[in-house]
Length: 212
Image (cartoon, rainbow, N blue to C red; front, side):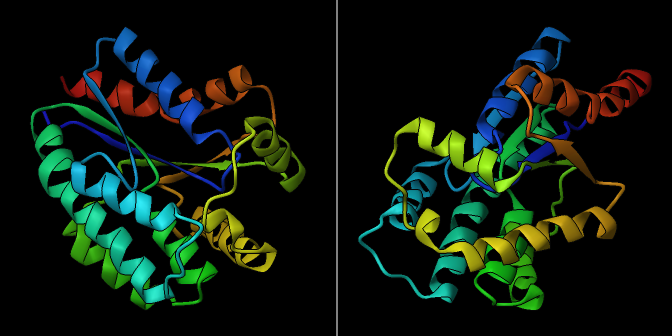
């Protein structure tokens, strides 16, 4: 049986990494083979590109940024994600195609057509079976990021207007693809957010058990 692809999306500070780790653990406890990945990354090429994209000392044009993300995604999909899904492994991705629509398409103002074309080339049409969109107020996100004590990377320095456009585009997905994208209130304590995320994916596990 083909595995399932679950992507976790949202602005920085919404808890994507925490949710991905907790969901992977719960799925494994349920007897599911799981592979947890992040974008960009997951391959040697992807991790190198991640370094370029995050480097605050670099200035990248929006189209350059878009194509670097697409290159990392193409390598990840072809060499890791598709083979894992074909083997029956469930894949949990910290960011995927919707990040490109939100950040580069809207945030960088390249538009849906350009961002969508880059996604199509990078994925060959692969979409998640479920996307969890983590939503939290700006004050909550900022507090969590301050707590990390890490210097802001290049993308995190993009400015409030860019992030407002990105957030608005993310929220549009809830009406554009309601069968795939589920909102998760990420403003609470980690255990509460994980519980909501689990509830938003439970039907996939139930369907897999029934078909199996």
